[in-house]
Amino acid sequence: MTSRSSKATARPSSEARAVARTQTLIQGAGGIGTVRKTTLPGGLRIVTETLPSVRSATFGIWAHVGSRDETRSLNGATHYLEHLLFKGTARRSALDISAALDAVGGEMNAFTAKEYTCYYARVLDTDLPLAIDVVCDMLTGSLILEEDVDVERGAILEEIAMTEDDPGDCVHDLFAHTMFGDNALGRPVLGTVDTVNALTADRIRRFYKKHYDPTHLVVACAGNIDHAKVVRQVRAAFEKAGALKNPEAKPIAPRDGRRTIRTSGKVELLGRKTEQAHIVLGMPGLARSDDRRWAMGVLNTALGGGMSSRLFQEVREKRGLAYSVYSYTSGFADCGLFGVYAGCRPSQVHDVLRICRDELDQVARNGLSDDEIARAIGQLRGSTVLGLEDTGALMNRIGKSELCWGEQMSVDDMLAKIAAVTPDEVRSVARDILGQRPSLSVIGPLKDKQAARLHDAVA
Image 1 (cartoon, rainbow, N blue to C red):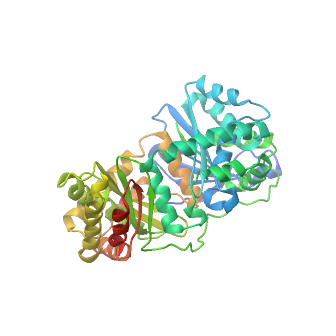
Image 2 (cartoon, one colour):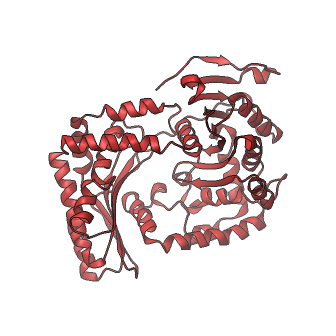
Image 3 (spheres, helix red, strand yellow):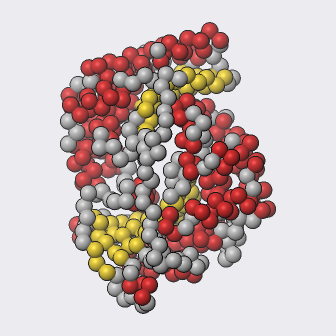
């Protein structure tokens, strides 16, 4: 983690402006890859990464709100609100918003997760002021009209139906429910048909006002940009909307833990007339701030992160039991998940589960070989760098880092952390995580006798 001393921003035009604070968080060579942060009066944080060698820029605003902030009756409100912010402001209609970016060949989108929401636009560097103005207008000036809520309800219900038609996607929602139960982390980000139908414009407006205060937002921008210009443009947009009302307000801290209860040894089966059975076998993982996450990343890569991984070799290459098989981790503020996914013919479910369980048990008892660990470290280092080769990925990295950790880590520091992982650390985290009793989620056309045998896989 690299941090530099702060310096006051130049040219303050008022007492309020004088308290804006700019820091260089990561000093890139020759300014390339330099990450800077300014905190405005009113609590709005702006982080940028400068890359003069590219001709594009990605601008995003991250909101400190996700589906885990919803009550049971509000399930789906965060995602619903994501849709509605594209429906128009006092300055722009929905068509104006989309047409503005289309006219310059830009890309614009948003996504909602369990613990945050992000709105972003990727444009040519010369069109960045337009992207800033449009996205800031959306975030600060959404009207959330009743007629728009009614129209968008239909689109969201279709999105839910589309997800349910994709069992390979739906099984991960089922696994979250298997692990967390009727807890905010266990509910689907999209909500359900019943909760979406019950949400009103008034409830969504209140949710918007509560969670889209500047203290809950992080602005992130990466590409061929100038930090000071981005700050001035963002500040002007927020001040024009009257959003920076309280100059004494401070940014909220990164989300802390809630000690979410997770289950083990539970099985959930959702019967569907599908050609394949879709399986997730997994157990509690690590919180995203856990120091062991680097070793966990190496373990996950060696187990199911590529074509040379154990699970891919054993399930697909040697036996041809599945086309898609992989492992993954999900880290939240206070907890995490580790899962193994496979899609296979219903008649092969028990063979696939037996092999996956045997591999997890073997690694928990005996660990991975030094060669497997070295290969996984190399693969993880390479994929980390290759995954940051565009301005969108860089914007995601700095925005999420500020929102979730409150600090930045350079790519070199990340690579050093991965390279420093030892075989003993990987074997230790394998014992701790893989040694737990797993839970299981399955979607497919399994018969009663097959379903009854699924409990054997987690015994």
